Image (cartoon, one colour):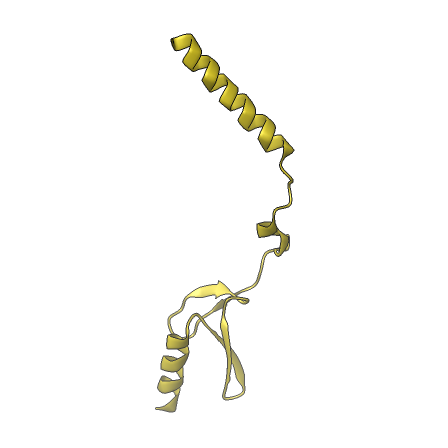
Length: 82
């Protein structure tokens, strides 16, 4: 009985190794990323760092700012009015 379980386990490990070698290396997840990474920007309202492609961009008083959410953008605009 134990030999049968070990044989099945060895078969599974071998199958996993072979299927891992046969899979294509470039998946759709890594297709859109460069080797250098992406610039990070800081939200001036809450201080969160996030990739520039995920940020909400806004020009306020002639300066480009990046925000993590619409809530932070709204709060920042409100604080700049005072």
